[in-house]
Image (cartoon, rainbow, N blue to C red; front, side):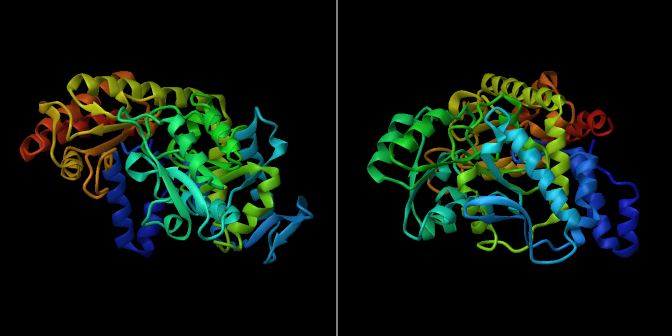
Length: 438
């Protein structure tokens, strides 16, 4: 299932044996470990091939269009020659993105920018397009499931803007009444909704009403749930959001990149904010890979895949709850599970989530440490974050989730017993074989 291009290791080894050896080792690592980090997935061979294409050689600073009097017009807006194919490629990706994300909301009323190198510059481009230094915006606090670029104090978004953070209730839920109250008090110019560690459904309609009531733009960062939104297993942020940002991997199962979609009237400001505001030339090989991934996501089979992601996450969460783990939000409604391992039942209570993440990896279970509400220092967190996009790509279903939950429970109960963890790791390696060879 892991994307392997014909003879690629041999080609690299002919030039650089050290890099080829690391590539081979990483392929083995991925094949022998349970991939449970929710922000990771496994691309198709076609996506991987496009990423390695000759488009990597081409510099394409600018856009395949120009803006005149606030309207986008067909024109070559590049700063270098030789752009016939890059222009055609970028237009193709833009059209596919609009079709995928805005199909039920009049795609012609929206604009897509597909050049962001990742989700962080996509978010920064949007904020810089509509805020001046010192202006106020609102975002979800990092220790409550938000992202660094939603205004955390160590991030540039929290340094150059006045970032007001909202949080979750004691039950791990978004409190929309409290968010509305805060917005009316602070009068932000932009409200950011979306999360990196929130396992429940986000009410974009309610967020849209809150933003409108205070005259703010609503930016929905759906980096984690984009694949679920376009497949109809999570509400779509449009038409409630003014702007949507997303990464293109995670549940969307594409290359590592960023995407911005907005109401057409905002397109010129966003284009200028990204280039020349933040970036130079886009990575056209990544845009080629994104084109392939978006085509895959437009296929009806992708909806089946997205539904299975959620079904798997729910099954895994239920088994973990039965085993005694405390789950933020008491479960999941998407692809993601956040366990509070410091406050779980005694059999699965661990004082240090950072050490647990390392010990789980010894057992060939790859998750990540993560802050939970109440943590004072994100680098000393109480949480372990799990996700089902990659294991679902491998073909696993609910039956496999029961086994994975058992692996996690045993490894946590014996997290200080290296011999037992090694035994579990051998079982995980054997468990993975039929899925990575399929």
